[in-house]
Length: 128
Image 1 (spheres, rainbow, N blue to C red):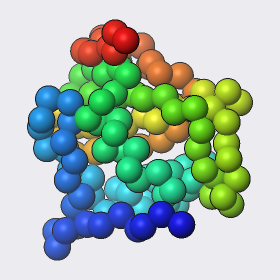
Image 2: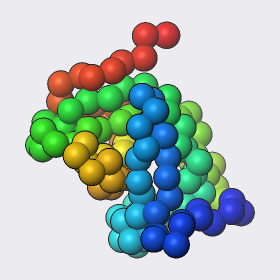
Image 3: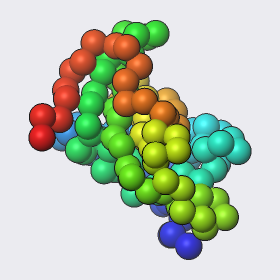
Image 4: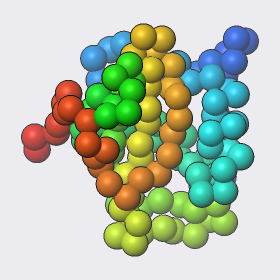
C-alpha cells in the first residue's frame, strides 16, 4: 500500500510544475475531488503521479471552459485499482488530468481521463 500523501500545517502539498512554479494541492481538494469519488478513488495509489504529471506532462492546455485554468495531461500504461488489481490503460485511456488555477497555482481537481486533450489552446506538447 502506498504511503498516504503528506500535507503541511496549512493543509497543502506543494509540487513543482514543468516551469518550476509551485503548485499547491489542498488536503480538502484531495479528499473532496479524489478520495470521495468512487471513479477516482484508485488515484490514492498514485499520488506520486501528480508530481510526475505536473513536472513532465505529455500536454498542457489552457482550459476551454475557464481561461484562468491550465490542464495538465499524462498517459500511463498501467494503474493499480482500489482493490489492488492492475488496470490496463488500453481499456479506458489511462490519462491523468490535473486542472490548476493559473492565478492562485492551486489544483482545482485531479481525475482519470480517456483522452489527453480537452480542446483548449495547447501551451506545451511533448515532442518525443
